[in-house]
Image (cartoon, rainbow, N blue to C red; front, side, top):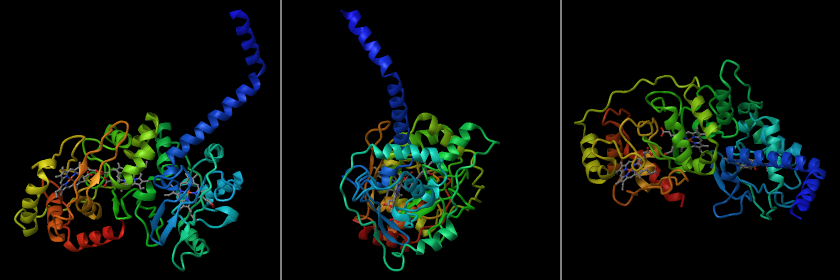
Length: 410
Ligand code: HEC
Ligand code: HEC
Ligand code: HEC
């Protein structure tokens, strides 16, 4: 009895063998497409907080004004159900949307253009399998003249170099994989590469740090003072996987990139990114400025504020507590040229990213109700110039600017 049903099952399997093999092949392709969409963090922009996956709606503040990421589920009326595969490829490789209209570079096609065509088509296979969601999104909420898509013709002409990633034969396969992920799908430079006035990447200084939406995405080159030169590959991997390491905890836009994207990457891909970042050939050694003298006014005021408000968590010597409170001594983030992120963190506080690797994120309290602009500036100047740190003093006006812009974004 048992034998017979087994034989029947075996027969059925062998009969459907061909179709079965094809199915697993397309399953593998869809799964590969899903993973590529994680590497690329498509959900990070195309999913509104609390909304259906990929149904659009996240508003992005760009140098030109406000743009909303559209619905990219296969819905025929409001999504990309009517888009052909070639149009999908053109959106990612050339920045052309429905009917060839020019897309704004808030959609990171200047990075996705580096992806192989096969990777983009695998992603397309995955997007086809999604549940269509009916959700009308008005993408373009930009003011005149930026609401005219033709303006993008000019922008593209100046800033956009289409073209696939070219492997470097001098480097290992792992290095090339890392370079591909960083420059292509994971679009790290979209946030970390300094921008021109028009919002294009300054390609001569990749990953050297940039301001975005009230945050500062720090220098992640091998520069020993401002970059992550002092981090080991394991430190980098731990940060990308869990959002925390013995130096720091991620907050703001990076904590979102970590929870949607890097924390879900395979260990091999994370290791490849770390290998590339440690050997990206960028980042010199920025001359370290002299620390401010301890007896300057800002330093004395700052020291007193630090002792009362900060030392309980970050410790008197700024060493923090691994995995709980970031180290301020020797921190590249604390010594960044642009103190924007620092003022943001101290004024509004943050909650560190929560990932499977590090479940509960500890919180940094807000001080906006407690410290005025001059006091925040003094304590920042103090942490930027203590324990061997050295960076320019923070003017109270920079804190005031940050306070004003935070008041505008709820
Ligand atoms: C940083 C935010 C961001 C990320 C990440 C992002 N997009 Fe977009 N995307 C946008 C915005 C904003 C637009 C609308 C641009 C415009 O209207 O000019 C857009 C437009 C598109 C369009 C064109 C839709 C149409 O109707 O013409 C497609 C297709 C698309 N994105 C797919 C993707 C895919 C696939 C990924 C991941 C590989 C992705 N996007 C990642 C922000 C993003
Ligand atoms: C959406 C914008 C965005 C993207 C995309 C992004 N980052 Fe970040 N990144 C930031 C911001 C902002 C910070 C500062 C975080 C903070 O203040 O805690 C940061 C911090 C970091 C740090 C910590 C640096 C330090 O000195 O503390 C590393 C390392 C890093 N990012 C690597 C990457 C890599 C690698 C990628 C691509 C896989 C990437 N980032 C993609 C915005 C981004
Ligand atoms: C209750 C504990 C606590 C107190 C008090 C506190 N912090 Fe923090 N701080 C944290 C935690 C936790 C983080 C990490 C949060 C995150 O990344 O989301 C943090 C992050 C920071 C960062 C960002 C560093 C990095 O690597 O991400 C700076 C700068 C900072 N704090 C400065 C201060 C200053 C200045 C004060 C006093 C005005 C202060 N903190 C008071 C807990 C505290």
